[in-house]
Amino acid sequence: MIKADDFNYAMENTRVLVAPSTAIETYGQTSFRFRLVTEPMDEVGTVRLRQGMIHAERPKILAPHYVSKLLLEGFGEKARDFAGWMEEQKDLHFLRYGFSLRKTDFSESILRESKDDLLERLMQQLRRDDDPVDTLIEGVDEGWEVCLMKFTMDLIQRSAGNNLAEWKRCGLL
Image (cartoon, rainbow, N blue to C red; front, top):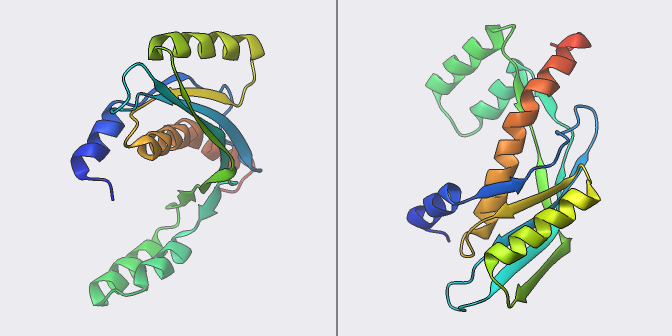
C-alpha cells in the first residue's frame, strides 16, 4: 500500500507534457494512449517507460434519488435525512465517470538514456504523429499508478464542462 507521503509526492510531481486533444466523449467510450516516463530510484542512468491504454466509459448522469439510495447503504438516520433532502433537490445531478486501465495493452521497458532525452524524443514523435488520443506523462516510479490517476482526474475536470453543456443542449439536464 502506498504511504500518504508517497501519494502526495506522486501527485505533486506528475506533469502532463502532451495532453490528448480530445475530451471524454459524452455519449460513448473514449480511449487514451499513454506513455509514462519515470526514473527508477535504484538504477542510475536509466528510465522506465510504461505504455498502455486508459479507457473512459461513457459518463452517466445520476439523479438525486439514485445517489440517495447509494448513500443509505450502511448508514443511519442522519444519512436517511440527508438522502431525503437530496431527493427534493430537482436541479442537483451528479456525473459519474468510469475508467479502467487495461493491462492487456500495457507494456513496460527500461531504457539506458537520460529522462530529458527520452521525453524530448517522445514529444517530437507525438507531435509528428498528431494523434488526438496520445498523452505523455512525466511522473515518479514508485507511485506511477497515482500519476495515471492524477491524469484521469484532470481529464475528467477538463471534460465535465463540455459533457454538461451537451446534456443541457439535449434537454437532459
